[in-house]
Image (cartoon, rainbow, N blue to C red; front, side, top):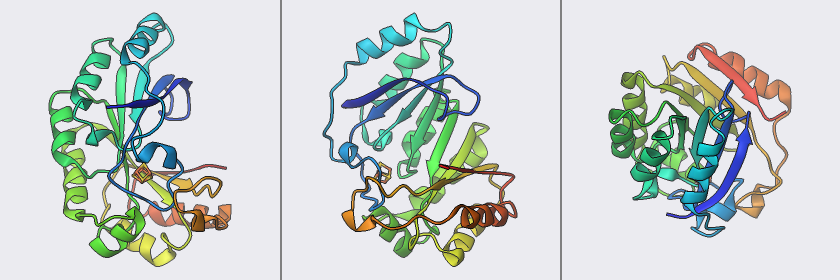
Length: 230
Ligand code: SF4
């Protein structure tokens, strides 16, 4: 496991919580719109976990939480140990994931090691559009299983969708929502073309009114919907 980044304080990644963020290198997806191409192939810095644990311990007076993100954290064999070590310091933990490893998610939730999950859903839950959005062949049954685990877990979770023109259209967004009916919280994230895995993704993001309309549509399926990135 390579810890490729550490953000000491963020108020953006867990609403209402002062959190630090640990970025793990490596990902099993190759989303063309990925804004962290530096993280997905296992490259990047190699930060010692001990220095992060020390920082959390010394700043427990204002740090309430740690966000584990990436890349895709669940591809790391040492994730369970990493999360356990942080949890021992009595901070809350949020896991960001693409949902492709339901069994690992289940283990972490079952061991009460995560307090919140953000699952990135990038297309209707069918193999063809999903694989196009993820840049690799995706078994969408795994994503559905992750959503089912989260639904039945009692752990707070939110769905994050990046509004990428061409990948998320009015029709595909509607289809995606029908597979998410009953979920509690969604963030619709504005697409950022500045740094992307696929250089061809240098396209114009949707204007804000489009995302507002998407949010209005999503409210028909999901209790709480926010847009982010403006
Ligand atoms: S956006 Fe896609 S490729 Fe990038 S880290 Fe997330 S799941 Fe991996």
